[in-house]
Image (cartoon, rainbow, N blue to C red):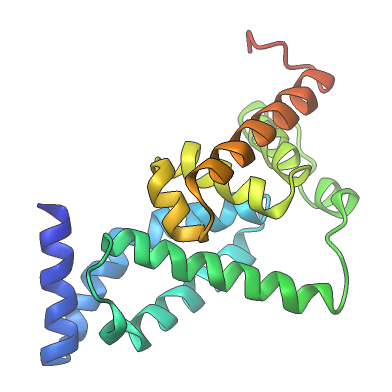
Length: 182
């Protein structure tokens, strides 16, 4: 039902130029897309907002190219994925992400926020594709097949990235005081 509603909204935007229909799509997917970027950027809220905005601008301008070969959400996450990797490519020309910089920016003593920051730090230890796969699977509740569609990787490769990412995060968290009972 949700996919049918998404298709109806897309049709309203493409055929009738109904911007309110696109507003409904933005409202529906704004939080998940922003959360996706928050995890990929290891907690950088401003950058996540900018990337989410770029994602919705690209989605709007390319909405006529949506062919309903996958769910709208899969198509939108594919755009988000591309926006993030375009950002990474442009950033690599200037400087690499420094985890000490992330640690300094997000140092806090509050338990909930501290645990969240530990997750972000653990995510920062992963390669970009591992971080993308684990974020989509565990934090965005996407299936292996949908992740394969979003990233363009075969399902087996997605599973490998997930396994490596879980192992790396578990090691990092154990080394930083999490014993699995926290």
